[in-house]
Length: 299
Image (cartoon, rainbow, N blue to C red; front, top):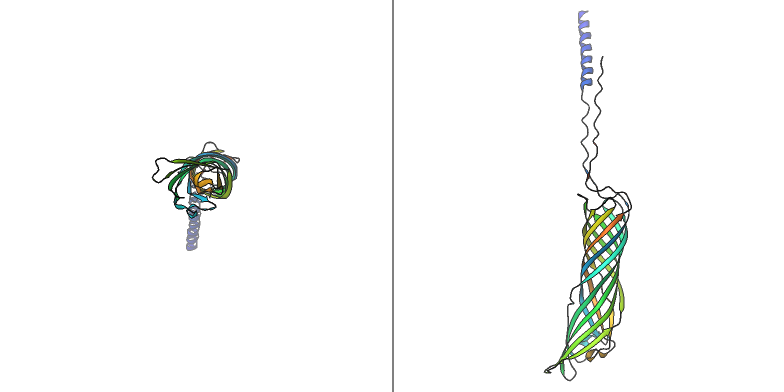
């Protein structure tokens, strides 16, 4: 009988100890806080943009023809060469509308007007009874309208700054006007040179255009961003412009010049206005949820 009481008492003590141990167990440790989020990007929404800038614009080649054929193929021409046209500056301004799909991907449609100039030169030697050397200097105004569909990847935002990369594809319409061809020719052995002059009518041409971009935007406010970036813009070939009123070799009205391979290295600055309600500038501190304190029961 005594043994049974002893066993029962030991069992009761064991159960009590187990219950106490379970009651004394600590609650699971709270989960670690989530990493700080990035602010300054918008989840989605439309935006408007406006840009101004300046570009270093170049032309790969000046294509000159006489009688609708290469100059060197003209009877009497003994040599002909063109000098790579000078690189010039072009100013531009544009507007656009876009959509931000998420914090990293956006798309916009832009249109811009560019104003620039062309300066080029060629050298020709010919013999129509007297060997003669001639240099022609060309100048023209080049106005271009560019329309592009652009896609960008925003690389994240730190301290209100968002670097990005982008590509664009679309069209460029070039209009060449005010073309002047001033030539100086001198016969071999002659003491004096003669001047020649030709001018060209206005002409236009539309080409495929494409662009590569990189830059950074700054969150001025929650909806307004300042955008500064670099762009390489390829705008294809310019139009063929006929020459008129020329003297010397250029008396044939079928003489023409064409500006080939127009591109530009652009620096631009602009503003983007977002219609959504983005957060702005810096990390988002998220609250940490801790487990409630254990309930203490008194017996």
